[in-house]
Image (cartoon, rainbow, N blue to C red; front, side):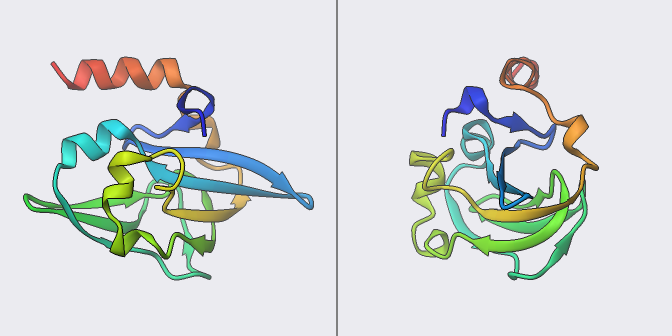
Length: 132
């Protein structure tokens, strides 16, 4: 996926929304900026398929050598798929965060959260401000 075509949450998750059979499916991951900030990932706790998530609430977590960090749901929905390969290949989050490093897919249940997402330019501005 092209990072410039994605939407971003303030908490560094990216979202790609596609419509399939009349349902909106959001593919989620964490940005390259987030992966770089976390450094040395050692574990990811993927959400369960079928779990209901709420925009702004943690839905899974990643652990680095220095901290455990929540990953927040940018939209309301139901987890319909998880990237089963990630726990055994955490380096994928760093090498391909916008492709093979996706974390979960959600069937969007409401538009809550979608309006708060940023485009790539706004997200880049936020990251540059955080880096200083």
